[in-house]
Image (spheres, rainbow, N blue to C red):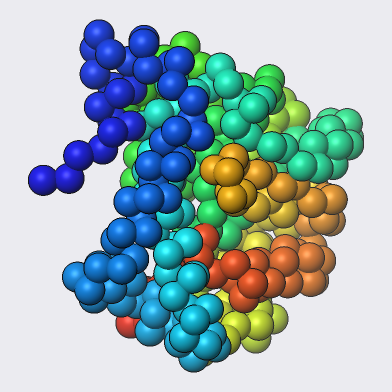
Length: 293
């Protein structure tokens, strides 16, 4: 049975208040140590790192692949830790999260048309973007599948941290039209909408990005929606440094046109996948050549 120290400390009544005094760096050292042990385990290599190693072996030498595998395990464990610990860490967001390029977001919102933050699907700590920017006073919305806005407390805990709105795409055309209307209203209020860009193994040539393992196409339908809504688009990538601090990096706004989205966000995303693949969780779907990831 797996035991999460973060879940134990930050979600157990009677303990969670006292646990706020524990520095997040303590948890990161624990995460790094346990991930290092797991990386040397033959069982882990055959399970958690199987697909990661399958894809990356085509472009990495063995020594580099071992190091990337260790970092990948740290990333996966650390992303779960922050989910459990955020109610206790939210008040320390200024020391825990480094926000780079905030001036680009302020400039975009100064136009009064709202703004999109665009991240790669299952890349980095994308789930941390809405919580940390909400803590900094921005009116945040996060789009996605599978859960509702009222699930935020269940997933992130019932602390007094700032909340954000989750806009669920739903499962059918009617629900997706309702989601689109919610996004339009949020932009009309000059709010921020964070979206993750999915990848596909097939698509139109105009939506393809450079990739080292087969074909990689961005979501053409989503790009068309971004063009329709006409709000400025800021590429956004959230990683972590070697001290466990989260780094949310915002880039200058792109015009809502497919050519600019592909040359701006598309090339950035391709570069992150190439240079820092340890922060992605798409490798199983890529290795199995599934339709999307």
